[in-house]
Length: 392
Image 1 (cartoon, rainbow, N blue to C red):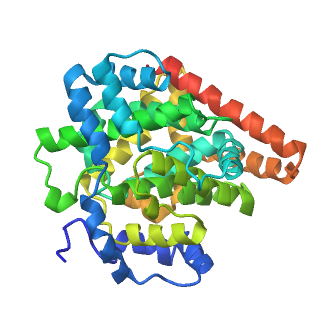
Image 2 (spheres, rainbow, N blue to C red):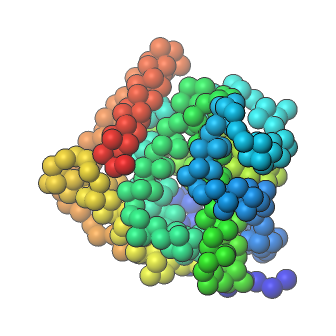
């Protein structure tokens, strides 16, 4: 089997994570270090993608335009009348998608969404400053962002979209039929397909070197970022994740991954499966390159470029606080690779960590926990509204 350029066994940058960083604790939980040679079996996934969604782009999006096609998707999901040709396209797409598969456990789904909401602002900090920023360490998975002009559009747009997606899918009953969360999932799936089709059609993308854009292997990595990596970040911030919550989060993201078009057999059912998958993915990534640091720098400057807070000095303060969280969560080694400077004034961010740990001490299994879930969800919804108000 030919090994593509992007597939590098025993990458040096992520090796540090597994030998000296947080990954060392994950391997201790797993009880063994996976054999990196086993990762070669996943190479075909670099050339596997969501063909069904791509077909929608060819049949509908390229004919009526992305804005009209997205509206058509939402109207279809709301059972609104559509032209016959549009209804046919969506009927063909959704006929094989079971929104209530026999393996789905609604109780686990609820527990997973509740953990996503319970930490409130801390969840969004972890997503931004740990999961998203840390993901830039891999050169390959981020190439589609470069080819779709993400740097020109700015990190603010990506944060607006990510917060919208997160808050809508994690709301109470956020994945019920007709919910905004469900619409966001299929909208995201179409955006992925639209980006992939047009990267391949209108650019010099080198598939032999980088694989297919937004392929199944990289989609799995994104799913692990929202589940396993997210929970690791929460624990570093002082959140105590129960075994029931952990099981719920993996089930929650298994369902979302399935709806996003990731092959079901790839999605982890538990922490051990997730750790092993993350090991194989990270340890076959090439080190970051110039694009890595450009994307990291754009995200670093996002608070300054955003329109909130309205005071420019306060936006600069927000940048420094996020830099503190980058260093606190990712560690100095990763921040050096990403080109992120250290900060002094941003250390005020430690106050939120103290607050989080103090609140966690008060949470049991009764009314305090339920209050934290409600309050955390409201806090995240408030952030979503701010992004929508000031950055549209």
